[in-house]
Picture 1 (cartoon, rainbow, N blue to C red):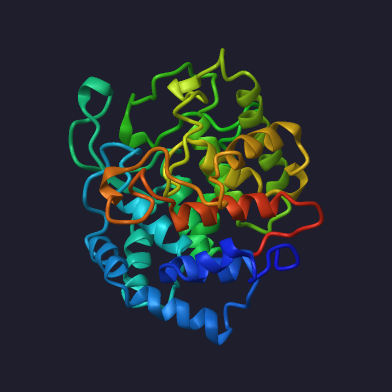
Picture 2 (picture 1 turned 30 degrees about the horizontal axis):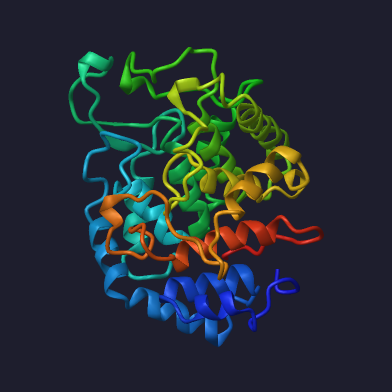
Length: 337
């Protein structure tokens, strides 16, 4: 993207004066600098030495606790890990090998890796702490593992194969491991689960396998069709209404920033008018300086610049700019590895 984004741009200068994870990601994703460059390495070292980063890493040391009782919980280890890999966490960083080993040590017989959860009998579970997986968590675990360089590991490939096998002609369904019994999301069984489909696409966007292309096409069509039918179809209570369209970080749940970030990673989708419309709606939210202010927040992230709704957020602005730059003709996505 470096042929489109210039360091002289006032917005880029603002980002390069930000927190180290904003600097690191700006250099990698917008300016296309090599991960081995001294400047990028310096930003990475500043990240891993930052108190906020250390606080999150300290929480991940307790993996898999706390229990997963809501996939929307923005500070569950699932989301903490995916956020850290997005802002520069690397496999060689202190504490990461231990976290990877903890994840790999709980692989289901079906293939996907498990997290510790407790589903009430009222909702079809056992009411006991159980290692299990669901399609609204398993792809995110794989996403983090792939970003940490584990994509070729045979255990990761086995998990991927099982999840790909769950694809239907309208996207990915609400599917869970046998340990969760009769548990099922609030929707019809023949409907696609928008969030599970989003997470699968997020994972597939990181993979080079050509066999994943057809699966990605089916998943993308599912989400884009739901966008055009947003007034009438809300499978599993996932709406694409006003709340969906509010800018919110980090990328945790089903919202416009998360969906456009994932879909825009597929070059063959970038001219689709439905995706273009979503990106235009999002891009129009900038202020007169080209900065973006969060419109909704996760309170658990209130100490970060995207955890408030009064001032522009450098991290949020960066993520929107990545998407808009990616959507430009004849551009390629810069990977963070």
